[in-house]
Figure 1 (cartoon, rainbow, N blue to C red):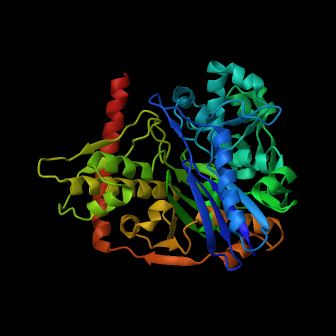
Figure 2: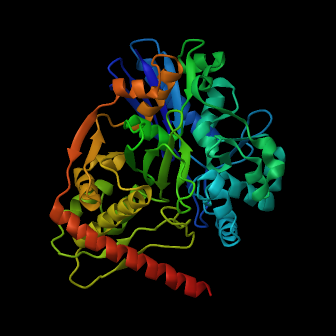
Figure 3: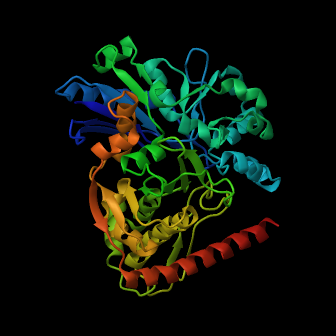
Length: 489
């Protein structure tokens, strides 16, 4: 068996070939370009993204000892990827961490539209979601919308190039356009946000076996695939990662330590009566929903700290943090996105801060404060989702035993890491294999494909430390936000 998961992330694109034991037998990865501007805009060139995706896919296909039986695509979520009648990009892709629509979200929050929408949709509005970005385009780039024919996502853009189909996978369409309970587009939401006239942009939503189509012959020749090779569009990267960690049954929880920090739990109710925040996405089976909370920044904060401290990379920051000897290090609130924060609270203007500094603090103490701050963000989101019995972590940060142990200590629950590094890609091919009928359902595929790597259990003394730190963390954040509110007048 050779199946390939194509994981088109925000900053890195990976093609991963899995063998018949579901091991990651081959990986090709390449960085992609994100245009990060000082005004908070975050864009990508869709053609560049496709070129990279085709290159890594072709490399893995060319090295496969067996014919490739399936290619399954997952990608970064949210954002606004518009194409014209010919299937060409109608402009740059606006990404999930773009902040240009922050004022629009602020207006919707103040007039109550976000709460009204949440009671139907179960997803908190944010500047990087397509509804706000479409409104921004209406106001500032109407010519882009005039030329646009279809709204896609990152994953469905690559799927279009592979198969010629214009679709959105159900998890991609859910936020922000679904009635969560019905699992379908809700025209009242479009009307609520003033974009009813743009309903023409919404493509067919696919799920299950309808997510699979044959690769285009010309593309097959380009990539070294056999004609007719099935291509599946899987759930986008967050739910695909949940599946790849085995979190598909009610009550199971997962976390991602990546470009975003995200935690979530599988529920048998969309919980539309909860405090308005987070996402409610279709789950991996009928009658299941994924309740997830994703932040605006994650490991990027470690990259920032590495630059600030003159270190080689994020790993060096974690290693340096281990050299801190202070009982109470500086308290770092790592809200470093120019778009503010979206989970577990919405505030497009909140920014990071460091408190408790004194002249005795060392670079190691500051590094520890950064790591502790990110750890407390995970705890904060998990508290909103509902503390689980255990937490399955993945993403680049899960390779750090120090950080995983910190999260176990801070949350007070056992933490597991996966048995493979490429969890999002595995989640994608699990879905594709189930859609092709290789398994009865995703649960059966998970039972066959997913194992457990390392387990971390909480140190109760460290849990007490993090309990105290969390109280100070929340207090400092509320003081920071109240000061910003006063300054806004």
